[in-house]
Length: 518
Image (tube, rainbow, N blue to C red; front, side, top):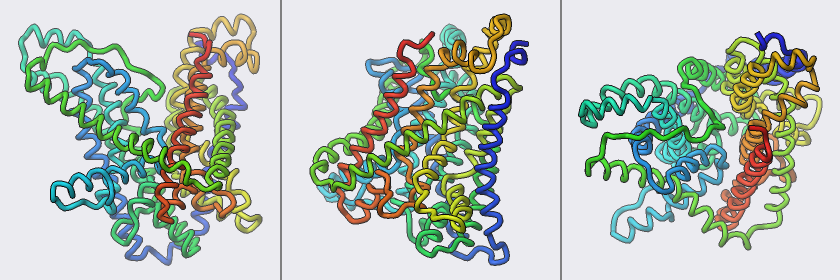
């Protein structure tokens, strides 16, 4: 087979895999070494564990259940702006979490649009903080993801099935029971498991909307033990608990997860003959409108409030923005240095390597890796002096599973199609990459680099552990402004962060597709 015949830098691929495993496992080993199992977990720790599982379960359940009618409506309705709306459903994935939280606060917070409207009609207001606030923010992030996964699954159904259903005169309920319900049984468990893992390791949402004895996640408990008490033993023990929960759930998710194409666009639309009645049409329009409003209102509030808050930003915001750009660019360079040889090695081997490497990134949260590396660095050097390099490295490691899922399928297809010709021409090593692989992988490389840069720009994980007042990134500086109740300045910083995150993603993604080979 061409897969085995083409030499794609096997040594460099193995070296990259060993390096990734060593970086993550070294952090896990440091946590194991520092954790004192005899001390056990206190009542507050068990409360944090219960709250973490509860909020993740509720977030996963509600996100997937609410996504069903939205995805179904998008699958059978075609209207002006549908493609743009589906594209916007991918925005929360690269949206900085702290920016989205500020938008959610602007809409649902104490002085938000919803409470203002409730007060105007004499109704009591709502509070965003606590369990319901954390779940609401997670639904904002994960409802679009669940909708995209379900919509992608709906689009894999052959159009002939719906044509046959129309010829048989099946009702919408019969179509759902015979065609769509079996599809949901296959796609929903993996979607819910994936969202559950994401919510287990969510830090910024819990930091801003949680807190307090009854609304503390494991990640937030690790941060509090680290920053407030400097209790490395307790932080290490909690990190192991978090690793066990996330690791076991990640293994389950990867076992039942549906196929995901992060870089793919819309497949061909299905031409549906069912649900042409007035009630079905109005219900679909209602679901699409509510989902679009839920997604766009917080983003609109960030832009509107950010424009007003720009003049009130301190100079430290611009310094933090420059720091974030440097960290993001370093993360992109590290990511490509690891992902390209690793993807080449995986593409020429049996399937399963992507899941094995991705499991490490899903199971080990940035906060856990940061805790481990702080323990390793602290005896020999100042961890605060290495805050930015460690943050860039961890951001690259967290983006690696997504990058591999983007790069490997295209690289495997390239080797299968052109492997024989490359072997006949004697191409191997760097010439093979230069003349065959890189030109055909440019769109995927650009997308992976843009995704990594955007995720790194908005990260508020490791830097929260390592940073001192002189090494703040823009998300951390924005959080500090929010903590000082300088909400106008924080809104201006949020607008800058949003523009930089989307901008770095667009530049890399557009650059990768510029004059790229088809």
